[in-house]
Image 1 (cartoon, helix red, strand yellow):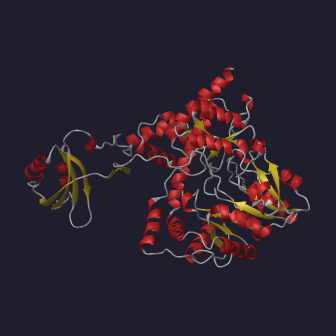
Image 2: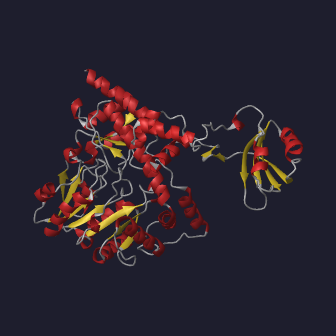
Image 3: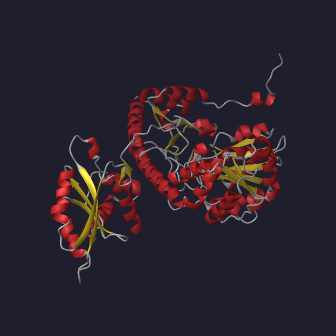
Length: 164
Length: 389
């Protein structure tokens, strides 16, 4: 069962639009079984959503992403959970990770422009009580995301049409 | 002027479907299911190791038999995958693809007039390579009803006192047939009793499905000493263009094969050898990922053939389907040519792999699912038209 789950996840991780019929055929399983496993994994929090991978750079609109390294003072009895929660609840925040190493939290933020992100950092993040320092890095270009290269993805099939 | 050509070379027929290949290769807008090589790029960490070797200036010949480090890794691999035990020092050497190994093995084992048994349909090179050694190729037509396995009866019926070598092309190109341990046991007894040798082309050994792992015929008791195992990197690691394979067997035969290789080739490409070390050391995961992808396509195509009503036995190896087209009343070549002209889908007629391939097509699934979907829609249109008539 664990194998089937892993196989399902490996396929839908890169193609969440696949039909249940096709998924079942490709994995050699019953459609009902596949649907049941997916439903169960949704309930168990294994599958947390179905996103679309978008290269916003190719859209004519303003989007800026920044990575922010944050040092915090962990709170007694709460560790990092409380402060992480205070941060991830902001809509502007895309992801939050607790890190090993020289700082504590990595936060990805998306905004319309640099000014909007700066404002957010100065007005919302930096003043938080347990935040001791922040370092903000703006993303200039995204080359690869979620295992998919975002640049020069089209590649011709260079093989001969027929080969023994 | 005298005829510059030898009688031998003139007696060897060019590939019967040459004409068909020429037509296909001109039709650039066709969708192809005709290729016998993986659609995956060589995994990056393997390519990167090749690049690194170039940067370090590893641009010289290696020893004739190949890099020691690679031979060691090959022996480890053969042991952990197929329970085979070879000494890296004198029982294995690195070749320019599996193809060179096939050629050289036949050259060192065959005297004029010796008979070589070749189960068909099969890869195109065995028969002409036998002819080049003045040996006599003896095709054994395999049956769809036996899942294109070689049976004990078929083998016995073709052995004469001139039989010297049996070629074992499993997992098979073009049928996708495999030989399980039980299947092999039956014929192993015959091989030993009749004292014949085996050239086992196991290039598709990593690509078997349905939990049936490849079994090497050389792993049976009494077989190592009469068996040359041929394998390579092309199919398992998607490394066709690197041209790298190897042969393993008893020192008595391998040392002679190295002699031919030494005179004809010198050594296999150095860059490829460095990359191959990385493939064997850290490539198991890549192999498994690709195998799973092929398996999904295989299941998808099986279902599609069932849906459009084309009879197709379930292949358990390689990356080919071998559906029957008998019911449409066309020869394999007619079917393939018309499919190409009318629907712009290129497949290979079964007859490219021996006369016993008549009535079949080879469909490669070394293509993305999206590509397979479009091709199957077109094939469906084509066969529906044939059925309507």
